[in-house]
Length: 321
Image (cartoon, rainbow, N blue to C red; front, side, top):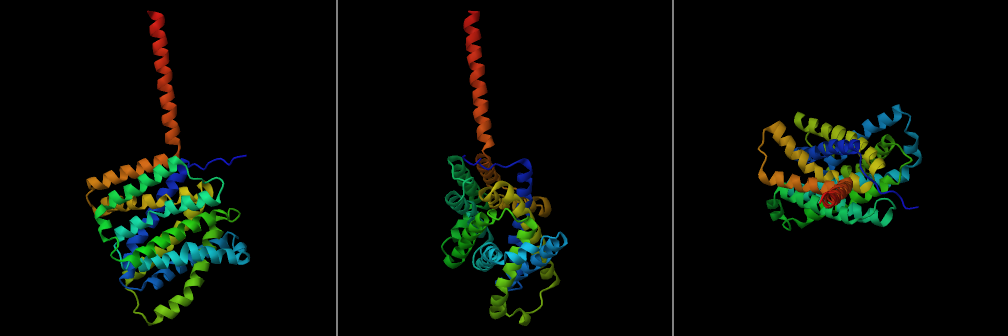
């Protein structure tokens, strides 16, 4: 029996939009934190704060046992889906602009669909998905502004760091969906707990955070925001979405992140919405509609309805004559 292709319900889209706000804010918060602390320390603080919160939630809900028994799984998940990509992005953002980092991050769904197509039965590459992913990536570039690509190739190491992080996110997302027997609380707690342990030795050896100047009050608030909102709460949403709609659909959040960042700027900071941003949003919307699949089915149904109406009109016209 052929597995039923994955699709997204309105609730899934709402959760994905919520996740885009949480992760979209992480790029902004990272920039502020990196002005006061080195990249590894920022990544360590981010997953460490999230781990404390998520482990406490899992303990209160009596969902902590699998974290202790399945630790090899969480070590791998924490390495691929948190520790290494967080550190790579934080380091990459010290060398390249946020706009270029966001464009590179938007390649996550491309990596995800290729990995999922090769390793899963219900998350396959289709023509509609390929068109949708292409439209989404083009939309991100147009919305951020093609000018962001002018820096491409100037800091190859930083660009490769962000691209490697995107590939790891995709692989980690596909792998995490195999762990459907575990709850989102357990997955979040296990992943962030393992990532914290994995980053402990590199941070102590390379950054020696105890010798660094204490961050400002603003810096501390930013770190708490990164850990509590952009990581802990984000992962609770992320693992719920992943269990419901699969890896490729979950990674579509990277197309929505630039949209939510622009909208936040308009609503909170009073920034003006530019024509290229509207064009980019339209391309992203077209891509998401193509990926959703139901839009295409709706167009086919609408075309069929018009064809039937036309046939009836022709038939009535001939009989009336």
